[in-house]
Image (cartoon, rainbow over all chains, first blue to last red; front, side, top):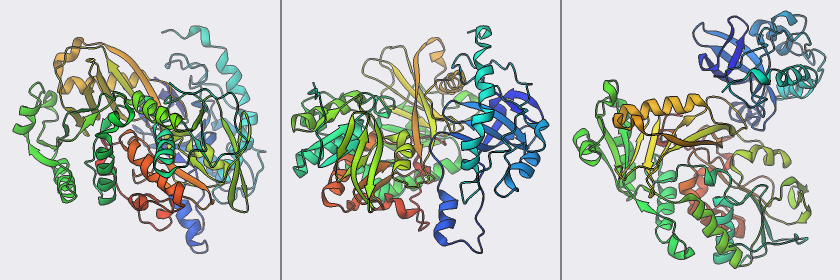
Length: 173
Length: 395
């Protein structure tokens, strides 16, 4: 079973969570064009990449944000929605998630990278101290998350990638 | 079986990205029906190695929308003599197809589908529990006591076929007519000038071409990035598994939306089984134990006597899903760039009709009438083609 680190409940099996889709910024419905609105309603960034996503821990009804590499099935970090809102969603042109509140950011050690047995949940308590706060790219329409995702994982991604390789030996069948 | 070409030409009339069933069928009909033979099919892996070789081979036309029913019915018609056309045994086997209903609301959908189907001349009937029991004598009608079967949508033309052979048949037919199939050749870029396609960058160099067909299933968003087109397509893995071969006992194809199972038995006795999509976006084809556990549990609800049968293999493919569970086909805002995508979990059965309609669309530059309900601009018009009710299971 894959493990996802909930900011409220700690490491839990991924089957306890519901995926809520990519974090996206809504255009202003009063000023945007019809084309911008329909694009927001339907279009998605379908290519693989490191994306901010909504997840919900079903049993506790707790919504939060995960930064996840959809190519490697690797959760880089998870954030409480509150921390993320202050960092990611409400700072124009600015800071990534965890900004000024990095304590709530966990490294999610989903065992995706090594490709071995799911169920390894080690390193889940590590904190991603390195917030991608200086990602810096301006959040344009629909691009807020992508812009950050492009910048952030270069910093944050390094940690779990290295850490992820190490515990391979204790992965049993 | 296929000509090996050592080098690419510098220019082609049409370049098709993806040597799966859809790409090869398009190449075949371009050459056979439209006389366009200066065609290259570029494949980064090998022929039929993507979702063509990963699906559960079910062929049916019992859809929900008029657009879908007409389109898939034409495909079922094309399947009938395809083996003769290819001079290749496709193991096409008409079995009958039951979509089980375990709730009143499911029965209502079955009646709806049956009426739409019959209106367009497709043989589908809403049937009661006794009919199901006669057709599938070995099934536990109570499904373990928690999901009793109330009835079904019975679709007589439902069939299975050998999926690899479909790609080989189309590929060989195209190859013999002069189409070049280049495997191990990855498209790395598409050159567009003044809103028109002028060529394709590949891992083996630049090719000049005025027309490109993208038929790459789960890799569609990556290709669309190259031409800066945006679609609702999102990618989730879809897993499947196969049992050890056992003596033939299951003639029809069985689908249960409530139990998230579809199953048929192949000519060599294996049970081919599939279920729902994996629950989140992922661009990987790794199998999971969760999948085997859940699917096996629901198989045993229907057929408890299978408890000693072993699972031999499991695998996954990348499904390019759309919000309305209908494909995205035809011309695009980039002139010369044609799309055959959004095939999600429902693409194999459509292989022949996709080849037919996309080849005509490429040859004429105008959408084939059968694909007008599937165009890319339907989303901006909020005119979706809602096929979710006809998806095999509740994804």
